[in-house]
Length: 102
Image (cartoon, rainbow, N blue to C red):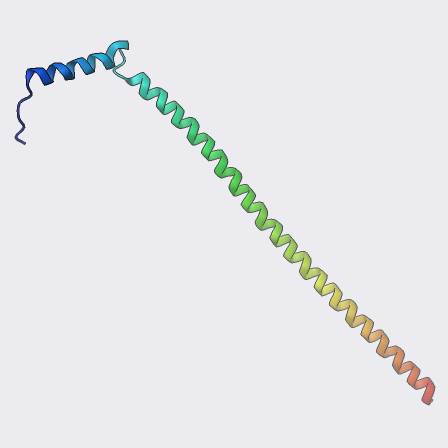
């Protein structure tokens, strides 16, 4: 790469900026550490939110499945009760017809 040489004035500006960053002797590491700590806190909050949403979603699915199974059981029970009622009525009718004609 062919770069133009830096002027003394530009070099002094850069040196002053680095000196300002290094005023506490950390070269800006403390600022970066603070931002990383805040970022990790944000990530932890987001992780909790995502976990809560997935738990709610899983609970919704399990509730829907339970309701579906419960509905199916009610339908089967109602169907069986209807068949038993019809068989009973037919048996009574057969018995009545036999007594009337017999």
